Length: 264
Image (cartoon, rainbow, N blue to C red; front, side):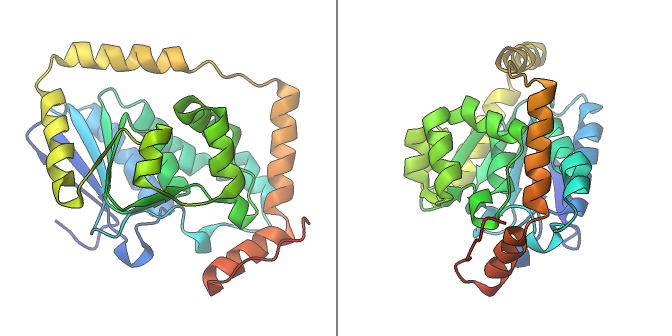
């Protein structure tokens, strides 16, 4: 493995593993990782011998702690609202619509965009003791509608409100009860559980698995917004990204203190 790469990709048999390799940053996402992930998914689509993809973080501290806070372009709301979600959504779309199942191996903290990445996978298996959460309310960000809709479909309206309104990190056991993860296993057995599931799937008829995934994805994509609603959400996103609160959220995060939001 090339440890200098921020996304390490390797295969064994019919299973491909992608490892986010930024342990010094708790495996946070950035444009380099997202672009590499999208390109890798495109390449894997062309490989007839890959049947399952596993996404994990390097080490045992973090699956993915979100988007690198230092790379959020504060004060550029129009750019962010118009295309700033592009890399995230492009990578998530490639994960979600990859023709075969994708498994999130949640081997450590799973927060923010990291949790959204996991939500786009077909399965989420977590180690005991990990914490998960989605924290735009702690940063002064209005999360995009497609992301919110994913959580509504996954865990329901009430649990989505809890996650997004509080921004709290919940233990894996609570996430399991909520439906946010599919399975919680002892940390020492995580790899066995994840790769065991991957091998089980890989042994099945690929056309059947591929067809089932496509149909399931189409059946759950029933969320539509009017042009007026889309524009209102866009303006709300612009206001949030141009706000003093976003700057305060970034500074508080970097200084490891509680933010003091003003609503402007």
